[in-house]
Length: 136
Ligand code: 5GP
Ligand code: ZN
Image 1 (cartoon, rainbow, N blue to C red):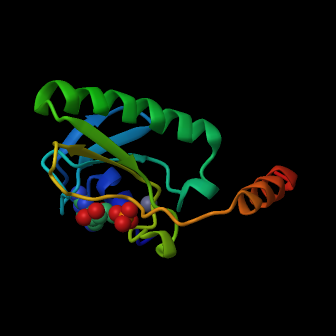
Image 2: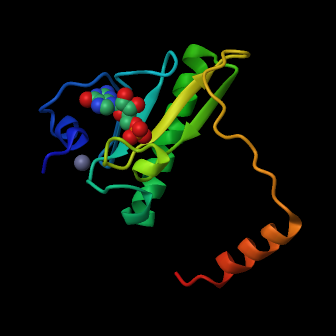
């Protein structure tokens, strides 16, 4: 499989490792948005959140929690963004499930994740009903 993160897991491509256990690996993003930008991945390949088993997501979440504390005590940021892109339309470039941890400092202007769209109460009622009705 031609997956760059699988190659990192296999040790065929180097990375700046931050933490590791049997199930997941944390390493520095090669093009960081901020000092200490870390990626956490499951060692087993999946493309995105939708095709990753919930148990695996839980293991990745534990590693994210661990790394967030590593970042917090070491770099002492004012905040940390945790974000995760699914499919190219959402900004996913590497098709191996990963979570970004981006340390933030007051007024750093690194990013604002979205601009609010005006929504009527009717829109919200309707979309909530549609989502509640969805199977699976
Ligand atoms: P995405 O946009 O898919 O959520 O983010 C992919 C991230 O992977 C990007 O921030 C990019 O800088 C990072 N990245 C891509 N290739 C490599 C690599 O070979 N090594 C590391 N450490 N990060 C990578
Ligand atoms: Zn992979």
